[in-house]
Length: 117
Length: 117
DNA sequence: TTGACAAGTAACCATTTAGTTACGTATAAT
DNA sequence: ATTATACGTAACTAAATGGTTACTTGTCAA
Image (cartoon, rainbow over all chains, first blue to last red; front, side):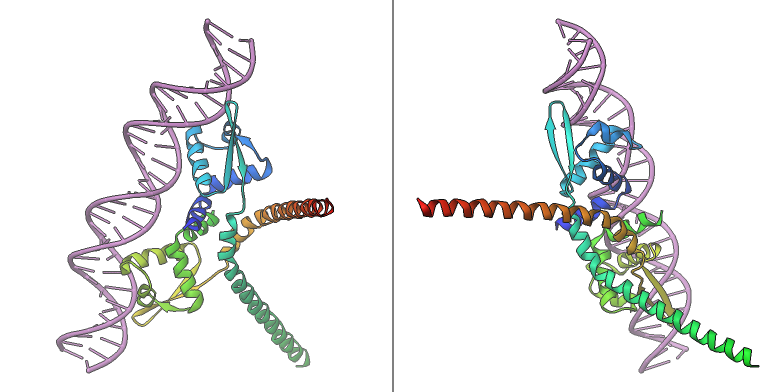
């Protein structure tokens, strides 16, 4: 039930950008975060709210400013869903490599045959 | 630019469910996929369209039915974005373990002191 | 060849999303 | 004490999302 929130939160590239920004400089204030965003302060606030609801950031108010801190742990939900598919695309990659190898082998055989003729 | 589509596609749990279903039995027909979905056939079709746009499934029409095949490779975009954060939560985990160890150590010290007294 | 089955298209609807402007409140600085 | 700064709330909008029903088209089977 919370997993869905995390997926949704992370589905928007503006929100990913906010997380990335915090990953580089944690504890940024709202106006600082706004600086790199192509929208109004209120727009950014709403995105931050969604990230907080998903548990991806925590906040602390100090004086008149609000600090934002990254918490990457809920991303483990995404990661664990993904892990099943990592296996799949590795298998695909293996089959592809295999195909390439066999193709090369048959081409080499053809070259040798051509050289002989 | 395509990455966003993949994130969006995967953000919906019904669509993840469809992918999971194909991961278990690849090449399913539309009506087969509908069976496990709590919505009309048209609803499922729309979800499948979105998955196809994101490159997560491919389709082949044979006779009067349409077969659906999983292609997990676009999920690598999600995975590679995530990889930066895996590092972060591992560091967090390390710090937590460290804290636990130190707490246990100090408790043991206290126990020994109590035993002596 | 007629009927059943699988899929596609069109039009519609309710809700959510992603943003805005305008105004209000609390804290810091002059 | 006043002003500027940082944030919050409310109300509104346009567009996207997630779903529906009704009808059509194509294909297999009796």
